[in-house]
Length: 479
Image (cartoon, rainbow, N blue to C red; front, side):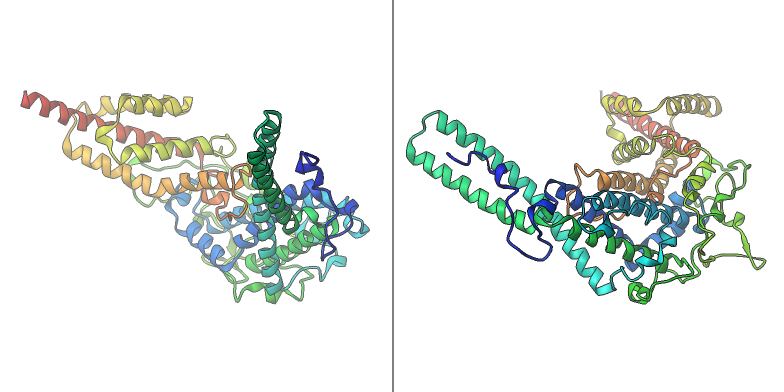
């Protein structure tokens, strides 16, 4: 067979079309990276829609888990969300700049510092952003490109398998009827792959791809200004088109990131574990509403000063995190603790039938800190109570465990979802990222998180032991 492998034909010059240039400027194999960038841009845009911003605003304001483990200062929490969005945008911009160096048009060959400070972009780029309706169309186009690349990859993999099988059939002397039928199957698969290639970024030029991504990034920056109330000396004339009919908060809705870098340096938790199932009152190691800055002599509640040019610093994200006590994110424990919480949640649904294997699995998942804390808590409980397992106490424990899980498990599930959305090897190309780190365990205080998890395990242990005693008593009675 002449064309034993289809891969040799993937670099053929495509038909002339918009965005399709001669072979020497085709993006080719880098279309896989480009499609990932397109998906990240589309996800960023989706994250900034009115619906998503309204949902974020409500969640950080009223989520008991966030207010307990992270902060009850709404402005600070919104600052964390903004810092993550800006960080994602800058990460995409770095990759776009790298692709830009391969463009023919010199305007795209030096993009390294364009988004170094997204709110101080050179005026020469003014007017590059899309209007709202056009941006929506471009987002749909990028999603189609990403979906086409995903399917293209799958079809290429299948084609490779078919060609390998065809070679084996030819070498094994299969009868001509079966061989011809299988050859036809390979030809049809090649045609399907070729059609997907024409629909994908593979045959587009570097200039076309970079221009699409670059203009989308400029548009997202303008959308961020609208949503978060960022004011600069120069604002695009297209900003009004990017408002989607209104923001999730008024223009004066978000505090400056630099203001969030000043925190109270001292203060204890002053929390009792007996109140963990109820709404906590916070004012300690994290910025809280009671510690918020004053504006015109009054505490801000639902409104905050807009971010102004000159007050925003992109080292603020580092200060936001480094100014705190240790968090699960800084300790690289957020994902591990999320899995522990979800496992506890599973066990709590049927505490009467927790097997010894499940107990061992849970114990093996615990960190050294959690094991020490659990050991101390169990010893303390025995010294303080010395009571037999009581039905009333068991019901109270079970109720307490459920109340804690009601506000803690959403953060754990969001942590898993956040990781999955950004694990590009497992993430479907057409999926949308809806979760930000502020909605997860990433910024949760490590010490407080370990106290809460320990309390959950102790409560689960008590309920399980009481249930086992009931079963043993019942068996003894029947005997």
